[in-house]
Amino acid sequence: MAFLGGEYEFTNSWFEDHRRIWDDLIQSLLPSKILEVGSFEGRSTCYLIDTLASQGPLSVHCVDTWQGGIEHQSGGQMESDMSAVEVRFRRNIELAISRSPCSVNLIVDKARSSVALAKLIVDGNSDFDLIYVDGSHNATDVLMDALMCFQLLRVGGVMVFDDYIWHEGLPVEVDPLRCPKIAIDAFTTIFARKLRLIPATSIRQIYIEKLCH
Image (tube, rainbow, N blue to C red; front, side, top):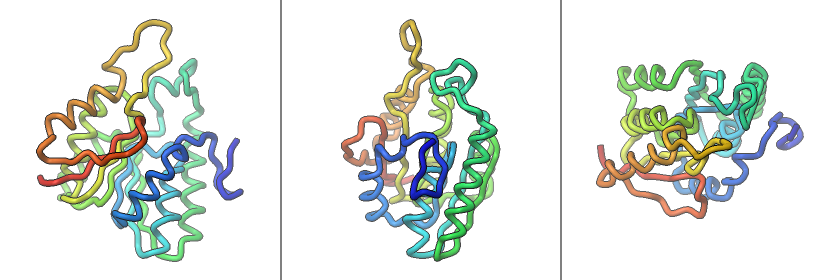
């Protein structure tokens, strides 16, 4: 069990691998309205609250089923008790909000991303400053998340895709349709005239800026 600041309860340090890039990104963008698809234990959520809610009011919308993917199920390479993961998420974000000097409007949407994002679109949302896509690893789900999130992102806003080169630890060849990369590549290629790839040293995350609708 790992801890951040001796208070948060996390079982992994995946997000910390990208911390320096995020520090630079957040400093230049200063987002106040954030959408997160896939929150797990809330490590990125707490980071955003800790970093941004000291500068002004913050709105964060988290979408997750807390059912996990194939990799989180019994025998999977990242087998997890997803009920316990959700409990840790809620405890961690409560702590982050409790010590924030500015107000935090946190919305937790426990639903499939296709349902939650569709509702946001129908409700007329299109002004998120930052969207973090870190949900399902299946290519069809990732592509759907990308398309819907891009519609919800404001012009000039930034979208981050996690797990770009992730694949299952299978004993046989990798199934590309169960990996994010093929979907992210398809999205960034088709939308090439509407976005800018932001240079970064990480090969596990992709960062894009929206140029136009």
